[in-house]
Amino acid sequence: MDMDDGMSMDMSGGSMAGDALDPQTTENGLFTVSAVSRLDPVVINETHAWTLHIETDDGSPVTDAEIAIDGGMPEHNHGFPTAPRVTENLGEGDYLLEGMRFNMGGVWVLTLEVSSGGQSDTVTFEFELK
Amino acid sequence: MRRLLVAGGSLALILLIAVVLISTGLIGGGTVGATFRDVFSWSVGGGGGALQPGVAPAHSWTETERGLIASLSIDRLPPLPPDPSNAVGDSPDAVALGHALFFDSGLSPDGSVACSTCHQPDNYFTDGKVFANVRDIDTPRHTPTIVGVAYSDWFYWDGRKDSQWAQALAPQEAAIEHGGTRTAHARYVLSHYANEYEAVFGPVPDFSDTSRFPPEAAPVENETAREAWEGMTEGDRGAINRVFANIGKSIAAYSRRILPGRSRFDDYAAAALVNDQAEMSELFSAQEAEGLRLFIGKGQCTDCHNGPLFTNGTFHNIGLPLPEGSRFDQGRTQGTYQVVEDTFNCLGEYSDASEEACVELRFIKLEGEELVGAFKVPGLRNVAHTGPYMHNGIFPDLDAVLRHYNHAPPAFPGHSDLVPLAFTVEQSEALKAFLLTLSAPPDAPPELLLPPNDE
Ligand SMILES: [Cu+2]
Image 1: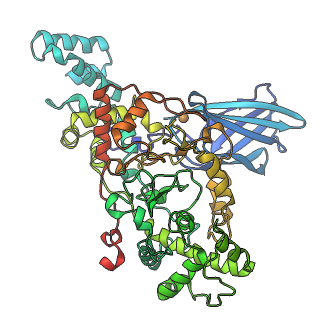
Image 2: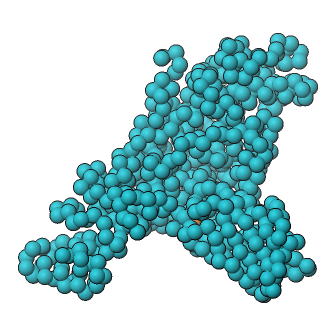
């Protein structure tokens, strides 16, 4: 890392390394969920959108999911400063999640409750903004 | 030689060097602690500036710390983005009209109150009072600065407005502030500033028929004015609302231009970014640097006071004491509902924004315990000059503020986001010394800092 040009540190003060969360399987194994931010890199104090992608365990896209959003900073005992929600089914298992915002650096969680075909399952992503 | 060994990453070697230096009398034992921190932070930082003999370790920062310091610098403040809800926000004619209106006490029935009555340019657009107060009557809240607030998403301490122009309208009709009505305001502006208004907004509407447009009509508590307002047709009320909104948009075009200036801290941050320790030690005393270290480190101040304006723009309850005899102030829990219902919000018919552009209002958080008794995090630029402090002006000076943060009593009702700092007297003094480096005259065309007829 180049030390003294300042460029390597441009996003310090609250940003995520990269723009995507590693795909994760829901608690009971029903779905695999991945999340990619449309703001790259993810920084604090900017309201932005993510694209969620949902598949069944055999890899086929879930195109009729209902998705409830929760999250925040468990260590600080607060939620998101906004009320993010899925606003659009983009097709082929993709969903638009709008209204995401982080207001400080630290460890955040994003919990998605995915419902499809009469079944629900939950997944929690944990990530750090440094 | 020493740097090479440090890069090898062996703490044992660092200790060995220290022992050798002490035993050879090159440095005194009393500075061993400082030397350790100095050397160790370089090793953590993965390199950095060359050794500068005689430079105090106060200005030695890790790469992470330097990044955090730089993130607070005014150099990271982006150019002011347009306000999509205010189509004339960047029009020079609107700035000129707003400048005149900001200082015009004709916008109050008794001619005694202008925006500048409380937002005084000589006081960083604050008034130095505990509560905003005109005609010897206290309002429930302390006057915040307007310097740099154009970057905010929410306005007022409780965020009950979502644009600067919508905010500018509310005090016009508040009985204990300007105390006006929108029909009187519209008529005043259209008669005193007809040409200026037309230059920005086009042809001046005709409100001369007082049976259709009563002299004092507005949706306010005053019964006469309210009944007059309710007696108007919807179309006529809309025409008045349009002019009233335009008054706010002009005032906002002016107040948008009042931005924060470059402080001594910003020069320090620039020096820190390139790790120029000689320059850093010219700019900050060891105490000020220690205060900065506490601010970004142990104090966790940057959880909320982050970014170039030293605010995350959101709402937090910090367990403030209530002024004697006052009732609990709900703060954000009420502000959310007020902004959603506001006629002049981003999604309303007087806003120039598309629905998509109203992101903050569309995704506003309406529920959550953290909203109870929460208020907007104020930026800290010029904090030395904007006391008393907090939404209720409860602390007369920064010492009182720091005492609160040191003890951080629990909030009731609600939940305090503070953890007691429990700083020593020296640490508290250092933190205060750092806060005093954030001052700078506002960055605005000089003529905008004076009433227009003083030009
Ligand atoms: Cu937090």
